[in-house]
Image (cartoon, rainbow, N blue to C red; front, side):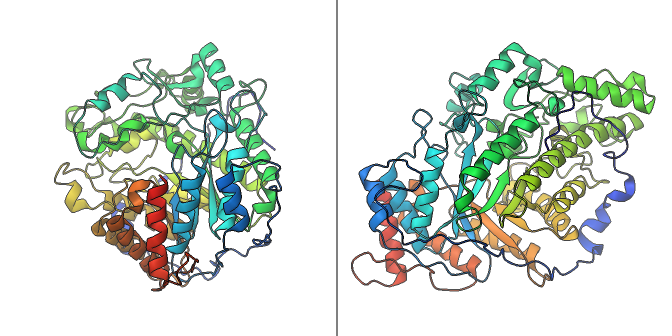
Length: 567
């Protein structure tokens, strides 16, 4: 049952973990004894759909255009074989479903792309299911058509699907000043995101009437990417709480896609914050493509009235009323050097009793939010053979400092003397969730040439160790669409760091993301080689008929050519 109590949550020590709950730096990388995971095993698929069925109309009643209809009815099935090694999934384009019609876009290109992915040995695709598209106009009125089309297409080519419950905004929106700033940048590593998917319109209307439903920083700047977790359990959405709205969405997804769950849809990642990650929007998601190079500190997101009421209640409960009036003083501006700020410098107030109180409350509320969502999702999908997962952000650009300021403002109470990720891993483990981590392709040697304080490898190793300590499976993801061999080798290296010593490791990788560039010849060769290495064998699993009796490698190359031409 979803939580709907309008009363303020209890801010007891239940979420302010004691010091013994955390690893010291000396334990993080040297003294941990790992358990094997004899119970970890591939999911048993409880139901199978007849992949060869070909009725004139899809069973869901939707009509497809001619190209897709032909692909669904007449293409040759790809046999599915459980592989050794680690499966690779590919995330679909952000705009794969039309925001106006709700249907899958570019059906011919999608069919050719799925054919190529299957030929290359890819396990499946990652499908982001946007709250702002499915439940766009009215509460509890859902349109799943485009996503049903994608699942049917994946079924046709023997691919699996991971569905991401995306409860956040995508992009910055038309006319956003930051978007205009990005367009003026000439840095090669900046990626301009052209797709914008807002929260549902009826949610935006409520946020217009009640601005405190959005996060706010100390300057009063509102962030509309995700509903403030301060009102998680309050009935502020036409009588429902945000947690209830998320639960109703997942429940309707389960009922609509039940015939595919466990056979085609084998994984569900539940969004828990901006970009789907369990964090605060301390730095706008669009900025995260380059914030690590500019070393942004981020801003604490605790100034909407719901967060302030929570802080006030916690301070009164602890008997420190003077700490109830807002976030830390002396946190500096976004671009400050941490050592020039009163709060974040090495001997700053982050390590004082006040700093510990505030950071325990701030991070504890984030963990409580994650646990509420995990509890709802686990209850909704209980008994269904799908892998549940949640995502943690890869905020690494101050990892070399004592205070880790950009992690603190994002809600991760992780410093040189405290492990902030182990409590999150424990919550995931409690509800049977896999932990998804990004930055798998990033290397310290390269990043530190630009930002000496950055350590993506150090951060990722800490996350991987937390997953091992808590005995939970892991999903990896790249943070940028780098297609060079060095990036793929780094992914293999970090996946090995997690898997080594485990009797039966459970690891998969999500390549982010599919576009025309992926299917260009040289990129495709590197990618398919990477898939083979991850899978643990040197042959493709799918042998599709492209009309010439070619080898599997030739078939994959032909499929990639068709995908490029279809875009």
